[in-house]
Image (cartoon, rainbow, N blue to C red; front, side):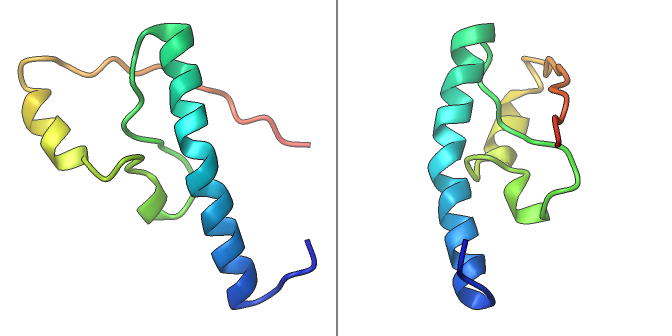
Length: 75
C-alpha cells in the first residue's frame, strides 16, 4: 500500500477488523467452535477477538475451552 505512518496504522486496523468476522465464521463453519481468542505475536489488543473475553471466561467455568492450533503460513 502507499500509506505510511498514522494512515497506515488506521488502514491496517480497519482491514483487520473487517477480516476477523469472516475468519471467525469460517472457523465456526469448519469446526462448530466459535473462536474467542487468538494467541500469537500480534498486538495485545487484537488477541480478544470480540472484546468479550472476560464474560466468556466466567461462563467457561462450566464449559472448559477446547483449543486447537492454526498454523501460521508466511511467505
